[in-house]
Image (cartoon, rainbow, N blue to C red; front, side):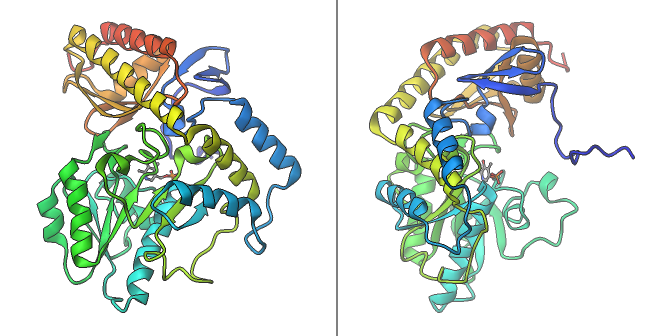
Length: 397
Ligand SMILES: *Cc1c(COP(=O)(O)O)cnc(C)c1O
């Protein structure tokens, strides 16, 4: 037998973390890494945040799981907080981002079903999007590496170019249910939607009775300096998928919707055994109570500006490696020159400079620090990026 006990679907690197301390990860041999990957935009309070740890420990000792057969005082309280701070009137809790997107897709189809337009099933999504790894969510992307060998996929999806409003408009027909879009594409390359694109999608939905579904699994939850990224665009969705940062590291996701959009989601239409159990909700509430307020968000914006400016200042010194910088708040992408491969550079930063980042599409290095970073972490990150660029030997040169 040569297959590993862990199904070998990940290209796991040599870092083998055993402990986390704030913005640092500590490996098996005691080596320290500055963690500007945050478990892919998840650990927004860093590692071992005392309030989050205590909330989880206390709740685990009190009540961990009961199923959704029973009333949920914990879930009701947290859902109310989310409703009070967003466009939404109702929340379905999930265990992951893909499940939140699945719930969003189901909610949209049910809406048209109970609305007397059951033929409206098609979801229009966008090139380079990432919505998760379930059969439904891989049906909503055009990325071959995620789709090959898993066909037949779900019918009722059409992928058009991102940030191309006319292509989106042209794809709408009598069978269209709505649009599914990331306000800032994460895996695809840290690309923000253009203002006129996201606003235009909202307008098309309003004109034609379609639903705007936002996937804020990566860009949401305070990462861009707003609670949700769509607030930068002055629009609201009808349905929104949330996960990653919401639990601060505890597996939790949520599908938020307006009362109108959720009108088909009645008793018996959807469910999850674990979804929103008391332990997950305790983690969610602890993160919410720390992060979802003006002072915290203002600090994310400030740190995002500082980090971006520091990166921009350093870039011209290494113009064979760095091309440009993009993103919003603490969701920053550094696009590399064609001669420098992002995966290779991420590995180099990790192995030789103790800095953890994540590669994304379009040859981009993703900088996704915990949202609690301080000036010293920014300085350390930029120092490591600069030293890394100096010592980097692009494979092709
Ligand atoms: C990570 C991600 C998902 C999937 O989340 P999982 O928790 O891995 O299922 C969906 N959409 C976006 C935008 C993501 O970044």
